[in-house]
Image (cartoon, rainbow, N blue to C red; front, side, top):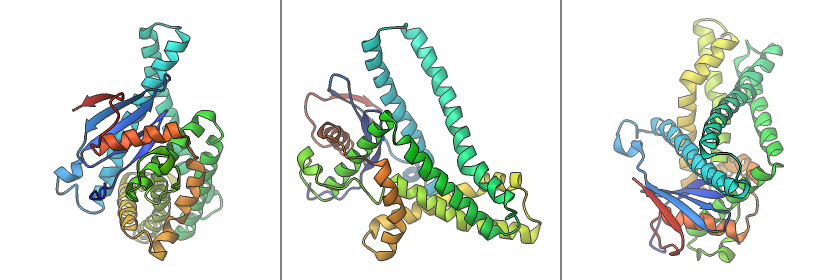
Length: 319
């Protein structure tokens, strides 16, 4: 342990945690019978295989897409395990019907989630700014729209935090952070020791989201001003279109580099100031976990780092 200096991180899933190490992804799920099941698979980022995709800024957007895909796969795995446990208790419909209904529900859920995200975090902030006649003032337009976007995001997270299932998810998020902190501080990886660490971690994706929101205000304002100077004040549909298609990859890439740099200089006063909003939001998105949840997170982390785990843990290995 003392010789290791490897970054590890992940995300919470349904009744479990996904962890990513240098060579492996591991998703550990706490089943209804209290056993732990782990899906372990090799993963090397395409940014390490392709020099162009590994360039600064570009690697940030590529990594974001990769993590979104990994996150969805991990959530789907945990959801299937939760469904199996639920079916074992209820013993209602046939497997064929259940599988078909699950596929339909997944598709409808994804469509609804993307539509809601577009409405709350793209269309409404811009539309409200337009109603206030800020379209010709590009800096003020994007400052106001960015502020509305942040308010909507914080309110959304706060509201869903009262849901029972989401609260469980946030507890596993807290377990993930505590486990990573313990590993980084070379502490003994047992629940009583890990429980002493904070649930707030500066390298969390929550901080990345805040970086994206802040960087987008700067980039969008500069480009909107340039477009207005060279052509004319962009209409609302035009503004939304080129912000999403052309500027979002740039914003994500820059935000990734800032987060990566901040992780290496975490004690710098400026870095502490920049990560403060994300850490504040983590007081909602992470909740104190119990020892079973911490144990699950530790199993995921040990698998991702190829460390020894208990023999009674079921491992599903995928290439």
